[in-house]
Length: 57
Image 1 (cartoon, helix red, strand yellow):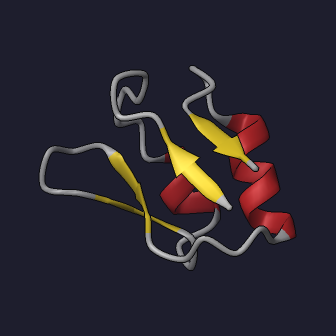
Image 2 (cartoon, rainbow, N blue to C red; image 1 turned 180 degrees about the vertical axis):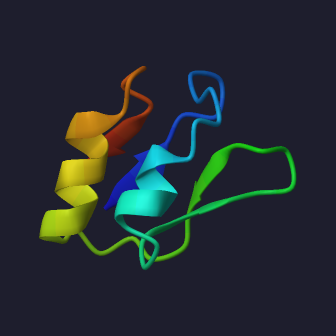
Image 3 (cartoon, one colour; image 1 turned 120 degrees about the horizontal axis):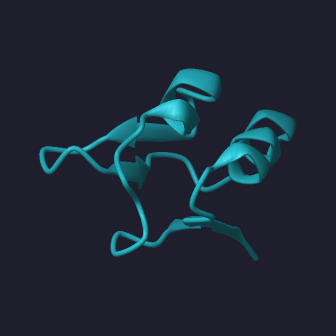
């Protein structure tokens, strides 16, 4: 399961760019999970998040 901490997210868009099937940018300009399945691209996006806002459980 994927989760984005909205308080940590700075809205850089990297996760949505790397893995658009799992993440999108919401109306507040922050990342949001659209598909909670943990895939390789979702893991890469979580690892690349500059502020560690994405968690995988």
